[in-house]
Amino acid sequence: MSTLSYKHKMAAHCESGAVTSLLNNAGLDITEPLVFGISSGIFFGYFHKMKSFAFPTFIVRNKPGSMRTNLAKRLGIKFHTEKFRDAEKGMQKLDELLDKNIPVAVQVDFFYMDYLPAWERVHINVHFIVVVGKEGSKYIISDSYFPKLVELEAESLRKARFAGGNMSPKGFLFYPEFIPDKVNYPKAVRKGIRKSCFFMLRIPMPFLGIKGIRMFAKKIVTWPAFARDTEHLSHEIMKINILLEDQGTGGAGFRYMFATFLQQASAILEIPELNSFSKEMMEIGDGWREISLFAARIGKNRDLGPDRLKELGDMLLIRAGKEESFFRRLHDIIH
Amino acid sequence: MKEKDGVIDCPEQQVILYVEKEDGKYEPIQTGSYITKNFLDDYELKRHHLEDTLKKKVESGEVSPVYYYMILEDLTLSELSARVGMRKGKVKKHLEKLHFFSLDTETIQRYAEVFNVSVADMLQLTIAVPADPEAPKPAGQ
Image (cartoon, rainbow over all chains, first blue to last red; front, side, top):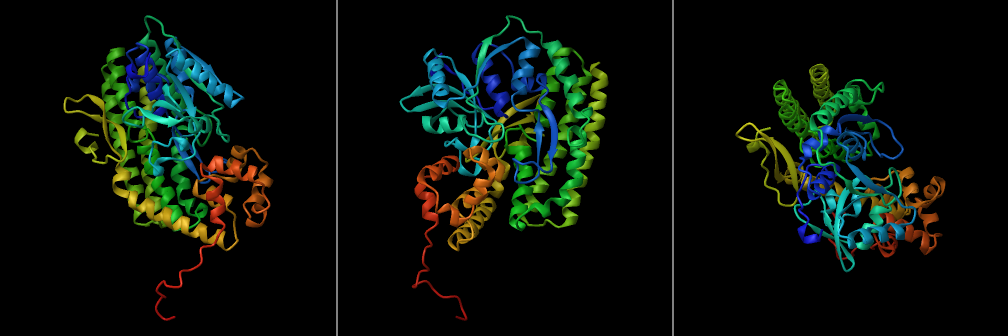
Protein backbone atom coordinates (compact mmCIF):
# COMPACT_ATOMS: atom_id res chain seq x y z
CA MET A 1 0.00 0.00 0.00
CA SER A 2 1.52 3.33 -0.93
CA THR A 3 1.45 6.38 1.32
CA LEU A 4 -1.01 8.06 -1.00
CA SER A 5 -3.54 5.25 -0.81
CA TYR A 6 -3.52 5.05 3.01
CA LYS A 7 -6.78 6.50 4.28
CA HIS A 8 -6.04 8.67 7.29
CA LYS A 9 -8.85 9.43 9.71
CA MET A 10 -8.78 11.21 13.04
CA ALA A 11 -9.93 9.12 15.99
CA ALA A 12 -10.80 9.78 19.60
CA HIS A 13 -8.01 7.66 21.04
CA CYS A 14 -4.55 6.77 19.77
CA GLU A 15 -4.59 3.01 20.38
CA SER A 16 -8.18 2.27 19.32
CA GLY A 17 -7.60 4.76 16.48
CA ALA A 18 -4.40 3.07 15.25
CA VAL A 19 -5.96 -0.41 15.45
CA THR A 20 -9.15 0.74 13.68
CA SER A 21 -7.17 2.56 11.01
CA LEU A 22 -4.90 -0.42 10.27
CA LEU A 23 -7.88 -2.80 10.11
CA ASN A 24 -9.94 -0.44 7.93
CA ASN A 25 -7.03 -0.02 5.53
CA ALA A 26 -6.60 -3.80 5.46
CA GLY A 27 -10.25 -4.18 4.43
CA LEU A 28 -12.12 -4.85 7.70
CA ASP A 29 -15.08 -2.53 8.17
CA ILE A 30 -15.03 -1.85 11.93
CA THR A 31 -15.68 1.35 13.89
CA GLU A 32 -13.55 2.82 16.66
CA PRO A 33 -16.32 2.38 19.30
CA LEU A 34 -16.59 -1.32 18.37
CA VAL A 35 -12.82 -1.73 18.76
CA PHE A 36 -13.03 0.08 22.10
CA GLY A 37 -16.04 -1.84 23.40
CA ILE A 38 -15.05 -5.32 22.20
CA SER A 39 -11.63 -4.86 23.79
CA SER A 40 -13.25 -3.73 27.10
CA GLY A 41 -11.52 -0.38 26.93
CA ILE A 42 -13.65 1.40 29.53
CA PHE A 43 -12.07 1.50 32.97
CA PHE A 44 -11.06 3.64 35.91
CA GLY A 45 -7.94 3.63 38.03
CA TYR A 46 -6.68 6.12 40.59
CA PHE A 47 -2.98 6.32 41.48
CA HIS A 48 -2.30 8.35 44.58
CA LYS A 49 1.45 7.71 44.79
CA MET A 50 3.59 6.13 42.13
CA LYS A 51 7.30 6.42 41.42
CA SER A 52 6.78 7.37 37.79
CA PHE A 53 4.10 10.03 38.37
CA ALA A 54 5.09 13.37 39.85
CA PHE A 55 1.53 13.93 41.15
CA PRO A 56 -1.53 11.76 41.92
CA THR A 57 -3.31 10.86 38.71
CA PHE A 58 -6.00 8.63 37.22
CA ILE A 59 -6.71 6.61 34.09
CA VAL A 60 -10.01 6.07 32.30
CA ARG A 61 -9.09 3.17 30.00
CA ASN A 62 -7.67 -0.32 30.29
CA LYS A 63 -3.95 -1.15 30.22
CA PRO A 64 -2.09 0.21 27.17
CA GLY A 65 -1.71 -2.50 24.55
CA SER A 66 -4.69 -4.50 25.76
CA MET A 67 -7.13 -2.97 23.27
CA ARG A 68 -5.15 -4.67 20.51
CA THR A 69 -4.61 -7.97 22.35
CA ASN A 70 -8.23 -8.27 23.57
CA LEU A 71 -9.63 -7.40 20.15
CA ALA A 72 -7.34 -9.87 18.41
CA LYS A 73 -8.35 -12.66 20.80
CA ARG A 74 -12.06 -11.93 20.52
CA LEU A 75 -12.22 -11.49 16.72
CA GLY A 76 -9.59 -14.04 15.70
CA ILE A 77 -7.32 -11.40 14.17
CA LYS A 78 -3.56 -11.96 14.20
CA PHE A 79 -1.19 -9.04 14.59
CA HIS A 80 2.51 -9.36 13.95
CA THR A 81 4.28 -7.77 16.93
CA GLU A 82 7.94 -7.13 17.59
CA LYS A 83 10.18 -5.39 20.14
CA PHE A 84 13.83 -4.50 19.78
CA ARG A 85 16.82 -4.16 22.08
CA ASP A 86 18.78 -2.32 19.44
CA ALA A 87 17.43 0.97 18.07
CA GLU A 88 19.23 0.61 14.73
CA LYS A 89 17.67 -2.81 14.16
CA GLY A 90 14.25 -1.46 15.15
CA MET A 91 14.47 1.39 12.65
CA GLN A 92 15.84 -0.93 9.96
CA LYS A 93 12.92 -3.33 10.43
CA LEU A 94 10.46 -0.46 10.11
CA ASP A 95 12.11 0.63 6.85
CA GLU A 96 11.97 -2.92 5.49
CA LEU A 97 8.23 -3.14 6.20
CA LEU A 98 7.60 0.26 4.62
CA ASP A 99 9.59 -0.87 1.55
CA LYS A 100 7.08 -3.70 1.27
CA ASN A 101 4.25 -1.11 1.51
CA ILE A 102 3.09 -2.38 4.91
CA PRO A 103 1.75 0.40 7.17
CA VAL A 104 3.02 -0.22 10.71
CA ALA A 105 1.75 0.95 14.09
CA VAL A 106 4.50 1.89 16.53
CA GLN A 107 4.49 2.72 20.24
CA VAL A 108 6.15 6.05 21.02
CA ASP A 109 6.80 8.68 23.68
CA PHE A 110 4.22 11.36 22.85
CA PHE A 111 6.69 14.12 23.78
CA TYR A 112 8.70 13.74 20.56
CA MET A 113 5.75 14.18 18.18
CA ASP A 114 7.08 17.51 16.91
CA TYR A 115 4.09 18.19 14.65
CA LEU A 116 1.84 18.73 17.69
CA PRO A 117 1.84 22.05 19.56
CA ALA A 118 4.23 22.22 22.55
CA TRP A 119 1.45 22.59 25.13
CA GLU A 120 0.00 19.21 24.14
CA ARG A 121 3.21 17.24 24.33
CA VAL A 122 4.08 15.39 27.54
CA HIS A 123 6.35 12.45 28.31
CA ILE A 124 4.08 9.46 28.03
CA ASN A 125 5.40 6.24 26.58
CA VAL A 126 2.12 4.76 25.43
CA HIS A 127 1.16 6.78 22.38
CA PHE A 128 0.42 4.82 19.19
CA ILE A 129 0.88 6.12 15.66
CA VAL A 130 0.84 4.46 12.24
CA VAL A 131 3.89 4.93 10.04
CA VAL A 132 2.77 4.77 6.42
CA GLY A 133 5.83 5.81 4.45
CA LYS A 134 9.25 7.44 4.32
CA GLU A 135 10.53 10.30 2.22
CA GLY A 136 14.22 11.12 2.63
CA SER A 137 14.94 11.60 6.33
CA LYS A 138 11.26 11.96 7.22
CA TYR A 139 8.60 9.40 8.03
CA ILE A 140 4.97 9.89 7.00
CA ILE A 141 2.76 9.48 10.04
CA SER A 142 -0.93 8.86 10.51
CA ASP A 143 -1.66 10.08 14.05
CA SER A 144 -5.26 9.83 15.31
CA TYR A 145 -4.82 13.16 17.10
CA PHE A 146 -3.93 15.11 13.95
CA PRO A 147 -6.32 16.00 11.13
CA LYS A 148 -4.01 14.92 8.27
CA LEU A 149 -0.92 12.85 7.47
CA VAL A 150 2.20 14.50 8.86
CA GLU A 151 5.97 14.20 8.56
CA LEU A 152 8.29 13.35 11.43
CA GLU A 153 12.09 13.47 11.33
CA ALA A 154 13.72 10.04 11.59
CA GLU A 155 15.74 11.19 14.63
CA SER A 156 12.57 12.22 16.49
CA LEU A 157 10.90 8.91 15.68
CA ARG A 158 13.98 7.01 16.88
CA LYS A 159 14.00 8.93 20.17
CA ALA A 160 10.27 8.38 20.59
CA ARG A 161 10.39 4.62 19.87
CA PHE A 162 13.37 4.01 22.12
CA ALA A 163 12.65 6.36 25.03
CA GLY A 164 13.40 4.78 28.40
CA GLY A 165 11.35 4.92 31.60
CA ASN A 166 8.03 3.55 32.70
CA MET A 167 6.39 1.38 29.99
CA SER A 168 9.22 2.18 27.59
CA PRO A 169 8.22 1.28 24.01
CA LYS A 170 11.42 -0.69 23.18
CA GLY A 171 10.68 -0.06 19.52
CA PHE A 172 7.41 -2.00 19.71
CA LEU A 173 5.62 -2.29 16.38
CA PHE A 174 2.61 -4.18 15.08
CA TYR A 175 0.51 -4.67 11.98
CA PRO A 176 -2.35 -7.05 11.07
CA GLU A 177 -1.12 -10.32 9.63
CA PHE A 178 -4.39 -12.24 9.37
CA ILE A 179 -8.03 -11.13 9.37
CA PRO A 180 -10.67 -13.88 9.20
CA ASP A 181 -13.11 -13.73 6.27
CA LYS A 182 -16.02 -13.72 8.69
CA VAL A 183 -15.78 -12.32 12.19
CA ASN A 184 -18.23 -13.27 14.93
CA TYR A 185 -19.26 -9.83 16.19
CA PRO A 186 -22.09 -10.90 18.54
CA LYS A 187 -19.86 -13.26 20.55
CA ALA A 188 -17.06 -10.68 20.73
CA VAL A 189 -19.43 -7.85 21.74
CA ARG A 190 -20.92 -9.95 24.57
CA LYS A 191 -17.47 -10.85 25.83
CA GLY A 192 -16.37 -7.21 25.64
CA ILE A 193 -19.35 -6.02 27.70
CA ARG A 194 -19.03 -8.81 30.27
CA LYS A 195 -15.34 -8.07 30.83
CA SER A 196 -16.02 -4.31 31.08
CA CYS A 197 -18.52 -5.00 33.87
CA PHE A 198 -15.99 -7.26 35.57
CA PHE A 199 -13.23 -4.62 35.41
CA MET A 200 -15.49 -1.86 36.72
CA LEU A 201 -17.14 -3.89 39.49
CA ARG A 202 -15.14 -6.87 40.61
CA ILE A 203 -11.40 -6.24 40.65
CA PRO A 204 -10.47 -6.57 44.33
CA MET A 205 -8.21 -3.51 44.43
CA PRO A 206 -9.35 -0.34 46.20
CA PHE A 207 -7.98 1.96 43.48
CA LEU A 208 -9.48 0.25 40.42
CA GLY A 209 -12.93 0.37 38.83
CA ILE A 210 -15.81 1.96 40.75
CA LYS A 211 -13.75 1.68 43.96
CA GLY A 212 -11.10 3.75 42.21
CA ILE A 213 -13.59 6.55 41.47
CA ARG A 214 -14.54 6.55 45.17
CA MET A 215 -10.89 6.64 46.22
CA PHE A 216 -10.30 9.55 43.83
CA ALA A 217 -13.29 11.39 45.37
CA LYS A 218 -11.89 10.86 48.85
CA LYS A 219 -8.26 11.68 48.09
CA ILE A 220 -8.70 14.78 45.95
CA VAL A 221 -8.93 16.97 49.06
CA THR A 222 -5.33 15.91 49.88
CA TRP A 223 -3.93 17.12 46.55
CA PRO A 224 -2.78 20.52 47.90
CA ALA A 225 -0.17 18.68 50.01
CA PHE A 226 1.52 17.44 46.80
CA ALA A 227 1.65 20.83 45.07
CA ARG A 228 4.63 23.19 44.96
CA ASP A 229 2.33 26.22 45.05
CA THR A 230 -1.17 27.38 44.05
CA GLU A 231 -0.29 27.56 40.35
CA HIS A 232 0.99 23.99 40.42
CA LEU A 233 -2.22 22.83 42.11
CA SER A 234 -4.26 24.78 39.58
CA HIS A 235 -2.33 23.07 36.75
CA GLU A 236 -2.95 19.61 38.19
CA ILE A 237 -6.65 20.26 38.83
CA MET A 238 -7.04 21.55 35.26
CA LYS A 239 -5.34 18.38 34.03
CA ILE A 240 -8.50 16.54 35.16
CA ASN A 241 -10.19 18.24 32.22
CA ILE A 242 -7.35 17.28 29.87
CA LEU A 243 -7.36 13.63 31.00
CA LEU A 244 -11.13 13.39 30.65
CA GLU A 245 -11.59 15.37 27.44
CA ASP A 246 -8.45 16.08 25.49
CA GLN A 247 -6.13 13.12 25.88
CA GLY A 248 -7.94 11.06 23.32
CA THR A 249 -11.12 9.93 25.03
CA GLY A 250 -13.89 11.03 22.66
CA GLY A 251 -15.23 13.14 25.54
CA ALA A 252 -16.17 12.52 29.18
CA GLY A 253 -13.40 10.02 29.87
CA PHE A 254 -14.43 7.55 27.14
CA ARG A 255 -18.03 7.46 28.42
CA TYR A 256 -19.42 9.00 25.20
CA MET A 257 -17.54 6.46 23.09
CA PHE A 258 -18.81 3.62 25.29
CA ALA A 259 -22.38 4.93 24.85
CA THR A 260 -21.81 4.84 21.07
CA PHE A 261 -20.50 1.29 21.36
CA LEU A 262 -23.62 0.21 23.27
CA GLN A 263 -25.85 1.72 20.58
CA GLN A 264 -23.98 -0.30 17.93
CA ALA A 265 -24.00 -3.37 20.22
CA SER A 266 -27.79 -3.10 20.53
CA ALA A 267 -28.11 -3.56 16.76
CA ILE A 268 -25.52 -6.34 16.57
CA LEU A 269 -26.97 -8.35 19.47
CA GLU A 270 -30.57 -7.43 18.66
CA ILE A 271 -31.16 -6.44 22.28
CA PRO A 272 -33.28 -3.22 22.20
CA GLU A 273 -32.76 -2.62 25.96
CA LEU A 274 -29.11 -1.89 25.24
CA ASN A 275 -30.28 1.30 23.53
CA SER A 276 -31.59 2.66 26.82
CA PHE A 277 -28.28 1.67 28.46
CA SER A 278 -26.56 3.60 25.71
CA LYS A 279 -28.67 6.71 26.48
CA GLU A 280 -27.99 6.31 30.19
CA MET A 281 -24.24 6.10 29.59
CA MET A 282 -24.45 9.28 27.49
CA GLU A 283 -26.06 11.00 30.52
CA ILE A 284 -23.41 9.57 32.85
CA GLY A 285 -20.88 11.03 30.44
CA ASP A 286 -22.57 14.45 30.67
CA GLY A 287 -21.95 14.27 34.42
CA TRP A 288 -18.25 13.53 33.84
CA ARG A 289 -18.12 16.48 31.45
CA GLU A 290 -19.58 18.69 34.19
CA ILE A 291 -16.74 17.52 36.44
CA SER A 292 -14.12 18.36 33.85
CA LEU A 293 -15.59 21.82 33.18
CA PHE A 294 -15.86 22.47 36.93
CA ALA A 295 -12.19 21.44 37.40
CA ALA A 296 -11.07 23.75 34.59
CA ARG A 297 -13.07 26.65 36.03
CA ILE A 298 -11.86 26.39 39.65
CA GLY A 299 -8.31 25.85 38.38
CA LYS A 300 -8.42 28.98 36.27
CA ASN A 301 -9.95 31.02 39.11
CA ARG A 302 -7.44 29.56 41.64
CA ASP A 303 -10.54 28.76 43.68
CA LEU A 304 -8.93 25.69 45.21
CA GLY A 305 -9.88 25.76 48.87
CA PRO A 306 -10.97 22.63 50.79
CA ASP A 307 -14.67 23.35 50.15
CA ARG A 308 -14.22 23.47 46.40
CA LEU A 309 -12.15 20.28 46.33
CA LYS A 310 -14.76 18.59 48.53
CA GLU A 311 -17.41 19.71 46.04
CA LEU A 312 -15.38 18.13 43.25
CA GLY A 313 -15.06 14.95 45.32
CA ASP A 314 -18.82 14.87 45.89
CA MET A 315 -19.42 15.15 42.13
CA LEU A 316 -17.10 12.17 41.65
CA LEU A 317 -18.98 10.18 44.29
CA ILE A 318 -22.22 10.72 42.38
CA ARG A 319 -20.54 9.36 39.20
CA ALA A 320 -19.32 6.33 41.18
CA GLY A 321 -22.86 5.58 42.39
CA LYS A 322 -24.37 5.99 38.93
CA GLU A 323 -21.73 3.81 37.27
CA GLU A 324 -21.99 1.09 39.91
CA SER A 325 -25.73 0.81 39.36
CA PHE A 326 -25.25 1.02 35.57
CA PHE A 327 -22.65 -1.75 35.29
CA ARG A 328 -24.53 -4.05 37.68
CA ARG A 329 -27.67 -3.83 35.52
CA LEU A 330 -25.65 -4.10 32.30
CA HIS A 331 -23.97 -7.23 33.64
CA ASP A 332 -27.39 -8.76 34.38
CA ILE A 333 -28.85 -8.02 30.96
CA ILE A 334 -25.91 -9.43 28.99
CA HIS A 335 -25.81 -12.79 30.81
CA MET B 1 -24.08 15.28 24.58
CA LYS B 2 -25.95 16.88 21.72
CA GLU B 3 -23.96 17.76 18.62
CA LYS B 4 -24.60 21.50 18.98
CA ASP B 5 -23.08 21.50 22.49
CA GLY B 6 -19.94 19.78 21.27
CA VAL B 7 -19.01 22.18 18.50
CA ILE B 8 -16.04 24.32 19.59
CA ASP B 9 -14.14 26.60 17.26
CA CYS B 10 -10.46 25.97 18.00
CA PRO B 11 -8.34 25.27 14.90
CA GLU B 12 -5.17 25.11 17.06
CA GLN B 13 -6.22 21.77 18.53
CA GLN B 14 -8.74 19.45 16.97
CA VAL B 15 -10.23 16.47 18.79
CA ILE B 16 -12.83 13.80 18.09
CA LEU B 17 -15.93 13.92 20.24
CA TYR B 18 -18.76 11.35 20.25
CA VAL B 19 -22.11 13.15 20.22
CA GLU B 20 -25.80 12.59 19.69
CA LYS B 21 -26.82 13.64 16.19
CA GLU B 22 -30.26 15.05 15.40
CA ASP B 23 -31.54 11.62 14.29
CA GLY B 24 -30.59 10.16 17.71
CA LYS B 25 -27.54 8.30 16.41
CA TYR B 26 -24.28 8.59 18.31
CA GLU B 27 -21.41 9.46 16.02
CA PRO B 28 -17.98 11.12 16.07
CA ILE B 29 -17.48 14.75 15.12
CA GLN B 30 -14.22 16.60 14.62
CA THR B 31 -14.26 19.67 16.81
CA GLY B 32 -11.98 21.98 18.80
CA SER B 33 -10.49 21.44 22.23
CA TYR B 34 -12.51 23.15 24.97
CA ILE B 35 -9.58 23.66 27.32
CA THR B 36 -7.22 24.95 24.62
CA LYS B 37 -9.82 27.42 23.40
CA ASN B 38 -10.71 28.75 26.84
CA PHE B 39 -7.69 28.24 29.04
CA LEU B 40 -4.51 28.18 26.92
CA ASP B 41 -3.61 31.71 28.09
CA ASP B 42 -3.76 30.54 31.71
CA TYR B 43 -1.56 27.52 30.94
CA GLU B 44 1.00 29.78 29.26
CA LEU B 45 0.99 32.22 32.15
CA LYS B 46 1.66 29.44 34.67
CA ARG B 47 4.32 27.93 32.44
CA HIS B 48 6.03 31.31 32.12
CA HIS B 49 6.01 31.79 35.92
CA LEU B 50 7.43 28.31 36.45
CA GLU B 51 10.19 28.89 33.89
CA ASP B 52 11.09 32.18 35.58
CA THR B 53 11.19 30.65 39.06
CA LEU B 54 13.33 27.73 37.90
CA LYS B 55 15.67 29.98 35.91
CA LYS B 56 16.28 32.09 39.00
CA LYS B 57 17.05 28.95 41.01
CA VAL B 58 19.58 27.83 38.39
CA GLU B 59 21.16 31.27 38.23
CA SER B 60 21.50 31.49 41.99
CA GLY B 61 23.23 28.09 42.03
CA GLU B 62 20.47 26.39 43.99
CA VAL B 63 19.75 23.79 41.30
CA SER B 64 21.17 22.57 37.97
CA PRO B 65 19.73 22.69 34.44
CA VAL B 66 18.88 18.97 34.86
CA TYR B 67 16.51 19.93 37.69
CA TYR B 68 15.14 22.80 35.55
CA TYR B 69 14.11 20.52 32.70
CA MET B 70 13.03 17.67 34.97
CA ILE B 71 10.42 19.88 36.66
CA LEU B 72 9.45 21.65 33.46
CA GLU B 73 8.85 18.34 31.69
CA ASP B 74 6.98 16.86 34.66
CA LEU B 75 9.37 13.97 35.24
CA THR B 76 10.09 12.30 38.58
CA LEU B 77 13.59 11.39 39.71
CA SER B 78 12.83 7.68 39.11
CA GLU B 79 11.43 8.34 35.67
CA LEU B 80 14.36 10.56 34.65
CA SER B 81 16.95 8.08 35.89
CA ALA B 82 15.24 5.27 33.96
CA ARG B 83 15.07 7.38 30.83
CA VAL B 84 18.68 8.54 31.01
CA GLY B 85 19.94 5.10 32.05
CA MET B 86 21.72 6.14 35.25
CA ARG B 87 21.26 5.22 38.90
CA LYS B 88 18.83 7.38 40.85
CA GLY B 89 21.51 8.45 43.34
CA LYS B 90 23.71 9.66 40.52
CA VAL B 91 20.90 11.64 38.86
CA LYS B 92 20.02 13.15 42.24
CA LYS B 93 23.54 14.55 42.47
CA HIS B 94 23.23 16.00 38.98
CA LEU B 95 20.24 18.05 40.12
CA GLU B 96 22.74 20.19 42.06
CA LYS B 97 24.58 22.82 40.09
CA LEU B 98 27.94 21.99 41.70
CA HIS B 99 27.87 18.40 40.46
CA PHE B 100 26.43 19.39 37.10
CA PHE B 101 29.59 21.35 36.29
CA SER B 102 31.71 18.25 36.75
CA LEU B 103 29.78 16.32 34.08
CA ASP B 104 31.36 15.44 30.75
CA THR B 105 29.67 16.46 27.50
CA GLU B 106 28.56 12.89 26.80
CA THR B 107 26.53 12.75 30.02
CA ILE B 108 24.99 16.16 29.42
CA GLN B 109 24.14 14.95 25.91
CA ARG B 110 22.23 11.99 27.42
CA TYR B 111 20.12 14.38 29.45
CA ALA B 112 19.66 16.73 26.49
CA GLU B 113 18.35 13.85 24.38
CA VAL B 114 15.70 12.97 26.97
CA PHE B 115 14.67 16.62 27.36
CA ASN B 116 14.73 17.10 23.56
CA VAL B 117 16.95 20.17 23.83
CA SER B 118 20.55 20.84 22.80
CA VAL B 119 23.57 20.68 25.11
CA ALA B 120 23.99 24.41 24.41
CA ASP B 121 20.45 25.07 25.69
CA MET B 122 21.33 23.35 28.95
CA LEU B 123 24.67 25.11 29.40
CA GLN B 124 23.22 28.50 28.52
CA LEU B 125 20.89 28.27 31.48
CA THR B 126 23.84 28.33 33.86
CA ILE B 127 24.94 31.75 32.62
CA ALA B 128 23.23 34.41 34.69
CA VAL B 129 21.98 37.28 32.56
CA PRO B 130 23.15 40.53 34.24
CA ALA B 131 20.43 42.99 35.09
CA ASP B 132 19.96 45.70 32.48
CA PRO B 133 21.34 48.93 33.99
CA GLU B 134 19.06 50.94 31.70
CA ALA B 135 15.95 49.16 32.94
CA PRO B 136 13.56 51.36 34.96
CA LYS B 137 13.97 50.90 38.71
CA PRO B 138 10.98 49.99 40.84
CA ALA B 139 9.46 52.92 42.72
CA GLY B 140 10.99 53.71 46.13
CA GLN B 141 14.60 52.77 45.20
